[in-house]
Each structure stands twice: as C-alpha cells, then as structure tokens.
Image 1: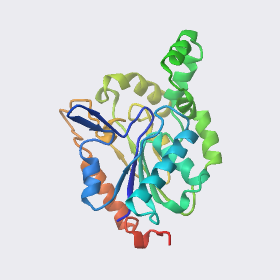
Image 2 (image 1 turned 90 degrees about the horizontal axis):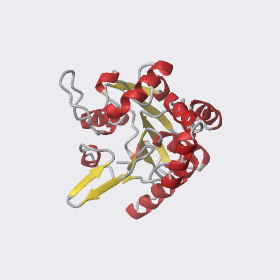
Image 3 (image 1 turned 120 degrees about the vertical axis):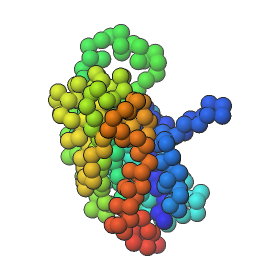
Image 4 (image 1 turned 135 degrees about the vertical axis):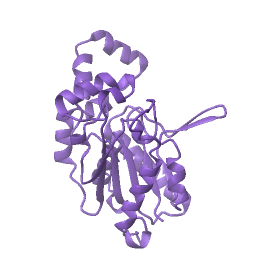
Length: 265
C-alpha cells in the first residue's frame, strides 16, 4: 500500500507531548485507522505561520526524507492535507517538481479561493499599530495569513494549476454558527456574510477543488477530530470512520496500490 502523508494547516503541528499525554493534529485515531490498513504513515511538520512557498519546501523535504528512511524512495504518496496544508501540497506538486512523487492529493477544508476572514484579519491589523507591534514582539509571521486572502488566492490559482499526473480530491465542511466552538463564532459570521455556508473558517465554495467528494457536517477543527463542541442532537461524532470511507473511495479508484498508482521505477 502507498505511504500516506498527513499534513497540518496554519498554526498546526504534527504531534505534541506533555508528560504522559500525547496529542496528534489528526486526532481521534485517524492515524491508527490509516496504519491499520497497511499504509506507512508520514506525519509532516512545517512552519506554523510561514508563507505557502516556505511550508511547501519543508513538506517536500519531509516527504523525501521519510520515504528514504522507510526504504521506499521509489514510491509515490497520497497526501491528506487540512486547511492551508492543501495549498502547500498544491504548490509543492506544481512548483517543486513533486508531481512524480504524488499519486493523489486530498484537501480537507482548504481555502482554495481564500477566506474572507483572512481578509478581515489583515484589514484590521494593518490599521492597528499596536497590533503590529504585538505581533512583532511575539515573533509571529503574518505571511501565512496574507497568502490566505481572497486576492492572494486568486493569483495563486492562476499561477499554480493542477498537474495532469496527480489526482485531486477535496472535502468541504459546514455547520451553523451555534454548533461551532465559541472562538469560531465571529469568523463564522464573517465568512457566512461574504461566502455562505462554512465550517467557521473556510466556506464550502472555497473548499471545493478537483473532484469534490462531499461536505462533512463538522467545524474546521472537527474535520481533524478536534471535537471542541458538545454534540447533543444530530451528532457527527468521531470522524475516524469518515477517513475510512475516504480511503475506500481512493481504493475503488485504484489509487492506493503501488502497482496501479504509477510507482517510479
């Protein structure tokens, strides 16, 4: 079975550990579900707030290094990328010569057309000198957020077309504002006003790319099993099973087996 890459979004991480406790960005057994099917797993870690180009270069190096360590340097990979991670992967495939190494890319709540909330953040930060000073003091890089604005993504899509040798899939997500975490309510309202149904950060319209498979009833963090809202009615629950169904769909298209996915000789 082909190796699968799990790639995080902006402000993300690979794994975190505090004493005996461990958190994976893709939580709730998603990694276990993938490994149980026989897929070698690569969990990427890149700059949390850097620009797409920087994160893409780091992603490329991680993939190549991990494949070599596995002794599978000739294999292509399947990438499952959340949020901004999907843009890193698209850039890596098109600009960094990785089309021959990627069989398929699945983006999960990725803002392919940008996010009106990124527009809102930058518009307000640019007006506030205090906010700019605070960000510099904290050492936070706004390059990643600037890349996620709608004007930036329009230019990105013109310059980074899909590669014909890679199969592109997408998953979107949507929930009403009263079913997202409190810290996403404000962003949900802004995105809803400008773009329609959304997961608190990314609209359904912006997340659709390539072969759009479905819209999950989840907020932006629930897509990676970070469940931060108590569900009482119409529960989505653990999305591990949705990843299993996603892998089933890829397998039905013959994308998970090296012999049918263009393994490099």
